[in-house]
Image 1 (tube, rainbow, N blue to C red):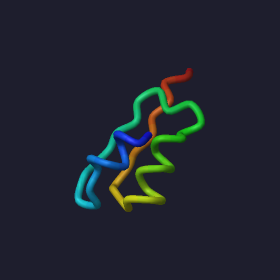
Image 2 (cartoon, rainbow, N blue to C red):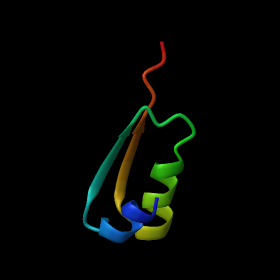
Image 3 (cartoon, rainbow, N blue to C red):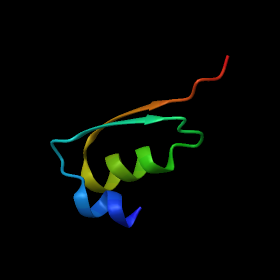
Image 4 (cartoon, helix red, strand yellow):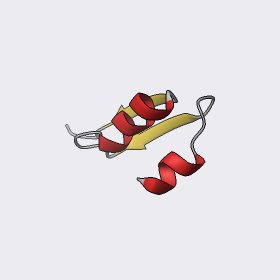
Amino acid sequence: MAFLLHFLRPEDFIVDVGANVGVFTILAFAEVKATTIAIVPVP
């Protein structure tokens, strides 16, 4: 999570494949305001 916060910028686009709860997606959007998509490949 610290890595994500250190290198992610607001103009970045994040795709969280296998997001489950979406912790990294929420972190990227709420803290950095990056564009995010969470994908959970469950039938």
